[in-house]
Structure formats: structure tokens, C-alpha cells
Image 1 (cartoon, rainbow, N blue to C red):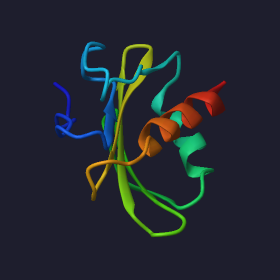
Image 2 (image 1 turned 180 degrees about the vertical axis):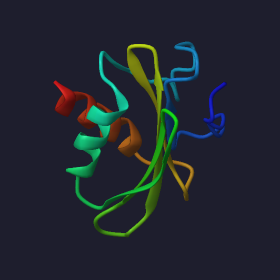
Image 3 (image 1 turned 120 degrees about the vertical axis):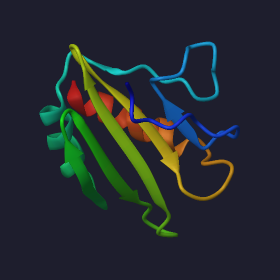
Length: 110
């Protein structure tokens, strides 16, 4: 059972736990990696804080550079990959920031 909340109805969240038909929110999971590897990448990113980690789950808070908005990013190990949910705490649109963040993590994983 996933700990991820369903995404809100507006475009400020991406999740690998929603079906691909939900084009506004769906993003592919991080394949072929484990949570420890994801943590090493995330900890090297600026303005991050791991706020919870237990039993194949990790929650990280990212703070934006200019306006200091907080974004919550969750990771769940499952099989040979890691599911991810990234969401802004405020606003209805993030102008693609959460999707770009997850794709930057994916790129850093190689």
C-alpha cells in the first residue's frame, strides 16, 4: 500500500503512482535504483532536507531559491525501482517545477 496521497486536481504535482492516462500528473518511476542511491543524489542538491525515512520510504522538503516556497517530495522503494511524488505546498500551478526536479534526479542517477 502506497503512502502517497492522490494528486490535487491542478497541475502542481507529479506522481508515478497515477496511471499514464493522467497526463497532467503522471511521471515514470525511477527504474533500476534503490532508495539509498536516490538519497545520495537528493542530499547533494541545494536547499534540501530529508524529514522522514523509514522502511523503504523517504520524504524530502525542497525549498525554492527565490521565494522560499516548500515542495514535498516522497520516494517509495518498490521492486527494482523507486516511485516518486513531488508536489508544491502552495499555488495551483508550479510551471513544471516538480516535473523538472524529478527529471533532474533521474538524469543524475544516470
